[in-house]
Each structure stands twice: as C-alpha cells, then as structure tokens.
Length: 312
Image 1 (cartoon, helix red, strand yellow):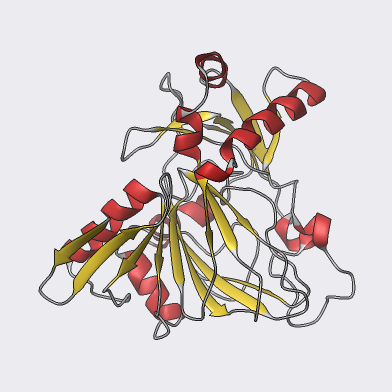
Image 2 (cartoon, rainbow, N blue to C red):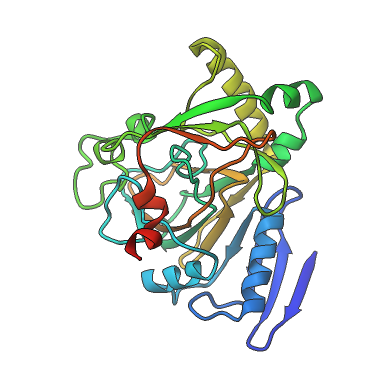
C-alpha cells in the first residue's frame, strides 16, 4: 500500500515492504531544512514500520547526514568509546568481510539508549553486505501469555564487554580499512547498565523487548539459565516473519527506531570494501512495565548522550 502526501516542496510516498517491519520512502531529498510536514511524515512512517529506507541519496555527505538527523532530535556523539575523528558520524569500514554480524540494538550498554539510528551507504561491495532488521515489538506481542508474564518482570545486565569483533577480528587486518570498532577501542571504557527486558516505547506506548548481543546475564538467574532463556527469546525476535532484509546500493540511507528493533549486518562480502556511516539521535532512559527506569551500574555516558547539554 502506498500513501502519498503532497507537500509544498516535494511529494513523499511510503511503500510498505513487509507485514511486520519495513517501508521505503520515495520522493524526498534528505538534508537540511526539510519542511516540518515532511519531517513529521518521515517520523510517523518510522514509528509505524520501525525501519525505513531511502534510495538515491548520493548527494549526502557527512554534514548533510548530520543536518538531516538534527531535525529528528538531539544527536549523540559518534560512539561512547570509539573515536573516528568526527563529532557525530561513526564510520564502519572493512575489507575483510567484517561486519556487525550478530543481532543487536545499538549501544544498549548505556542508560540512554539511542532513539534513532541513521545509516548511509558510502561504499557498497559488488555482492553481499546486506543488513537485516527485526521488530522487537512484534516479537513481544507474539509471545504466549506465560512468557509475557515472565519477561515483564525480568531485568538484564548489558555491557560492552561483549564485542562482535572478538569473533571475526583478523590480526592481519591492521591497515587503514580496519573495522572502526576494534576490540581495544570498543572496550577502552567499561559500561554496564541494568535494563528491563520489556520497555514501554516513549512515543507509541508499545511494549518492546530489549535484548541483543550486549546482554551479559539476567538478574536473579545463573549463567546457564541466562543463556538458555536468552536464546529462547532471541529466537522469538529473529523469526523470519519479524524481519526485513535490505540489499544496499550506493547512496542508500536506512533509518530505524532503535527502541523497537534489532539488526544484523551480514558478513558475506569477502575482501571487497564496505563502508557505511552512522549518526544516532539521543534517546531517553528505558522504563519498565511497572514504571521503573534503567539503572547505571558502571560507566558515565553523559559525554555520549548529553553532548549539547555539556557544550552549553
């Protein structure tokens, strides 16, 4: 189904791609100074479809990507620990087939999890390198009542101690194209935060599962129990019916609701170069179904999530 919205400066259409997640937005040139109706339509599509895609945005550079993102909210810094030389843009480049090939929600090891992530395709390999997203709201809604009752009172410890690079790191890949999230930088400052496994979405009121590979353990459960339950819940999240897979082209932009999704970058592009660049919009502290907020155990992320407050 296509919804067309006539605007003063451009015509925007939203084409649904999957029954539970994903839409393509056409008829908009991303950048600074979009009219308010266009920004509102993009945000509405994002909240409904969880991840939206824009083709043909080759005109965007880092500054244009940042300018577009700023119309959606206050930006975080590029990353809590990794310095890529930009205040807001995280470059993820690789030539050894390295990618974030593990299901995760961005930066859940801090208390204020980013609300929105915006990813721009800079260099796309000849084949492979797709990204897959999963709807964590749909995953929660499909749980049987017995599991809902369990997870609504369950909390998990998230930390950056787990790093996907540890699984795919190549010691010979130490040149200029080394993956931006190398293990040493990623763990240079340790973070640990307790989050509810079910959070209330601050804009939609929906209930979403907060899981992914930064989960270290569940509170009150031992390691074997945590592992078994984590796998059970993750399998629910990543059921194919809950997912959408995007085949990148040069100049594509993907934007997702980081409060309601997980994603997985497929590491199947051999030695071809792949570079994508990410900007994140700051989020709030997750709230559980009984009104409790996430709690910081270790690490001060104010420099990452409150950059504008610190500058002012």
